[in-house]
Image 1 (cartoon, rainbow, N blue to C red):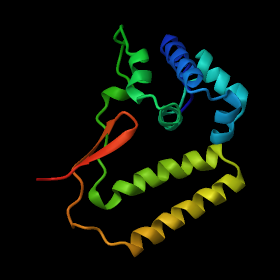
Image 2 (cartoon, rainbow, N blue to C red):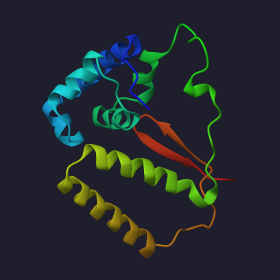
Image 3 (cartoon, rainbow, N blue to C red):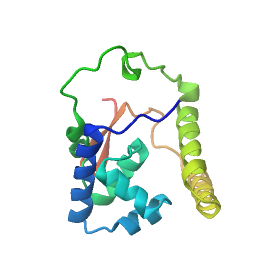
Image 4 (cartoon, helix red, strand yellow):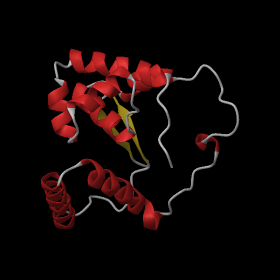
Length: 161
């Protein structure tokens, strides 16, 4: 699948990214080091010449302490596109058994594509530490959380009554 050409929505999103980064007093260089990409690429995101991935957008939201909805409000469409688009097809649901496998696949692909060998090793070490911690600690209840709702930069888990 080829990349889509950036458009007006990307420009508006880039303006919001620039403003949030400046308000948080974070440099393009600092963000480029966190993402493992060039400062020029950050500039392209802010100028709206390149599209920002959802993972980067989420990370930028957290780095700048800006709710992600503030970025996304910039890109709402005023015109309905002609013809069917990707978003108009129903999305496949993951079953319980493979819910995290899909996430793992997406994250692994992103890490392999955007990070160097040293950063990948650090990522694997962090995931291994998480795995050990999860095995070491026991959950307080056997019930699974119903949903996770984002409120600002914090997450809240709604549990069944």
